[in-house]
Length: 257
Length: 311
Image (cartoon, rainbow over all chains, first blue to last red; front, side, top):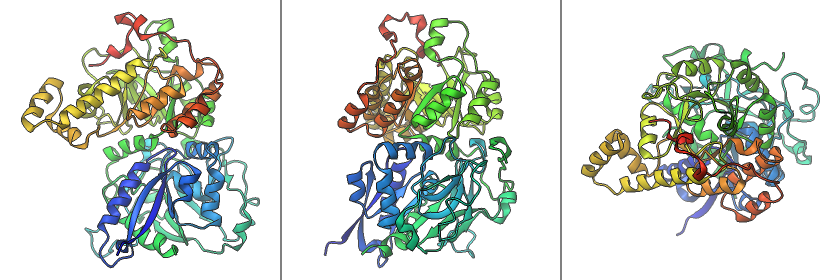
């Protein structure tokens, strides 16, 4: 029997998209028999055009420069189709680093003069939260598939000029777009869509920075809101493919027909 | 609270949980995030904002673009920290800056200024005729130029986390960049077909470590991101470098010395994303006005060639 094909796209406008394609392929191969992922055939493709976006079942928005990705998306005519993909069609999506910024309903410390967001994830994230490149770091995270009782079970995450999730917003987004002060922190907002009003899915915190990180302890670095997943770190830069496998298993396949 | 970048850095404190900040993965990782993008030379905050608005994934802060360095002559050095700080404050994208080859103190200064990448660059006048900077000990990552595989692997051994072709900066003539991309590709393909015995000899000939050469041959590409640089002036130049296998492009004098810089900058950004789509390339190449006049590489005297600098 031929397996059902599931096509996962990676937005390939700018940034580290090849790394995600490689990780998806490796993760699919590593799936244990009997799991959801092992039951389908995963195809990973680059997405640069509206036609390519139409052909995929789920999408990763990779790390890169969020300003560049959003400007190129706009000029390629992809910004509105992306908003439809995420917020109207509600297909599974995952944003890493710059991708998380694009999926957020609000972003602070944005480019002066504004940058456009795809939106859909009811959070405010703060760009370049830790500072400049010399403040980039890596640390182990207690992700859902990690066994807390096994000290050797570790997932090392790379934070590169990374954003964090600053606050969770009410799922009723009516207040989110106007009421908050927008003057000094260069906050930008995703545009409102009609379809937003019936989206009541709550944002769930998946992971925070460990307590040992001093003033950064407990900062939120991974969230999930139904079929939308966001991480502020880069799981595609290490050889560990478990988060990609977890995402397909938990956040993609259960949402497909 | 004002929009003040310098007030936020709060690095992680517990070294036992946090891997070393100097970890090479983090340095090379930032270069991976720049892939598929355009890094633009800018000489002031105003140009930096234009570059960011055009979609640049980073800017290179320097006092004079290479074409002006050529025209004016004299010793070219690291830029004034005041100008670098102004550029850092003006944009949210990564900021790179150049230091002279071998000038490890200029590099120390750039690191404390908070630049995100240092370019140890042959465009500036070399400070050391023998040694390059040992780049491992810095927290900030380095990008270096190379004309061939030997140079590239020597720079990577010294700690460079990103490479670029040298090209011939400030000419608007892409021929040297093309030569360097093809040379590196050719040498990697040659190495990939070699036995271990042959690789030991080839490593000796190139003046590089056997292990690094073998690793590169096995991968079929450099172990770090490789951008095209030097002489890129049009969207077609940029797309050509991408089709030849580069991960992204640097554009120096080509933008702000051309006609209508913002439009040209936007066009080159679109060309790098859609480098395989001739229809898009035709569209973005349309009506850009004259490109920089430039100078052909053939017309340069040997002593005028910047790519000869570095060893």
